[in-house]
Image 1 (cartoon, one colour):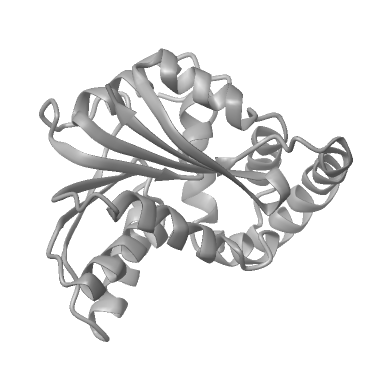
Image 2 (image 1 turned 180 degrees about the vertical axis):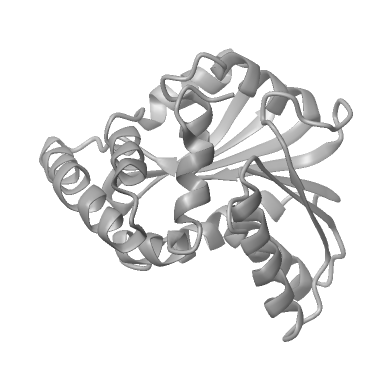
Length: 242
């Protein structure tokens, strides 16, 4: 379990979650997910897990890119929020009416005890969910250990997450934005101020790219490449299980 009441948070905001994301990233989150999906699919994995899948934006992007390339891969979405997964299922159904997709299955559960065999997945991705697993979380080591366990040796781990900007000037602007704008407008739209105060605070105080690489390397991963997005407010990391 997480040290924050995230079940309650996400259970309350799932209907407005996508809309708030579009607003606060100026619509750029879709492009970032496309980049992350392209990185994850580059080595043509057969089994892929989207951890903390939420409302399914990333796994549906993976499915769309896989369909365009003609590859029929197995995609799994895993999350602890039943309400978020129900929204992901709804979105999957809407997309399937318009195009043929690879096999997608969703499963509810704890990221610290995933119901998969060792080395089950060729690749694993997580978009804007890793901070929920490691930020001031007493189970951080267990969460990272589980990610490592279910990924096969040599498998790739792709992370898209908030980041601490390198520029001091942009850091100030980013901090003001996350402290005074995001939580209150997000709270107004969703009706849950506490949820967006947590999300804004965890983003504002999160790690730099190098700090995140060091944390993941200490968990057994090897950093292959990284990219700073949105002036360093977002990181895209590609890692490999040693």
